[in-house]
View 1 (tube, rainbow, N blue to C red):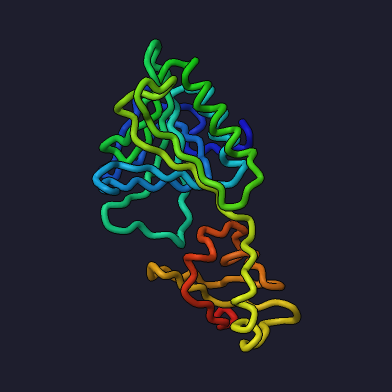
View 2: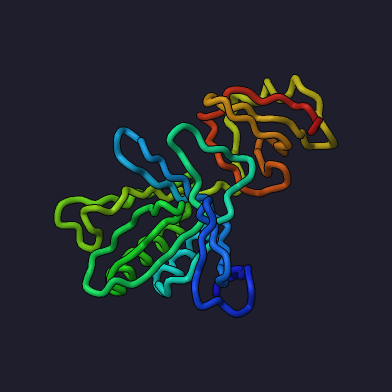
Length: 236
């Protein structure tokens, strides 16, 4: 299924058990390499941010259409950490609810739940797939309920979709800063990026004024406006 990985035993157990942290055992799981952050208190309203590559969103759209109730494990980026009132969700469960509008919610077991009539889930899947096909770098899309929404239920939590960036082109203002720092090797520099919110990313590869990878991962989880400083430390 579009590259989805499987973990756990080959044959699902008749019943599913839960640990205290909400991790599932005893049942086959799919694995999708996205990040899902849940802000319990974001301007007094719950808010979900789903971050992934274009391929991730295509896979998620297919899983929404399938809606088979299987547990989908989420693999967040290890460099990220949750802030106050924010948690990373560890599983997704998508299941049909005949005759009902789509409801997106978060369970007490740290799971993203997506439920609704399959015809309405198909509309959500189409929106996710179209978003994944966009060519705009740093593009975001909101999925929010409004009165008389054509497929979302009123109680559905607001969702924001965003891309990981495959690379990040730095503006000219960073050129003199980088030029004053030595190259790590011919034509490239490796350093640390410090964000205005206090986060730090090490092992940042910079080639020709473009951030191409972070710790060998070709996913850039920040924009230029979030950068406070760049220090070339050659990965030390």
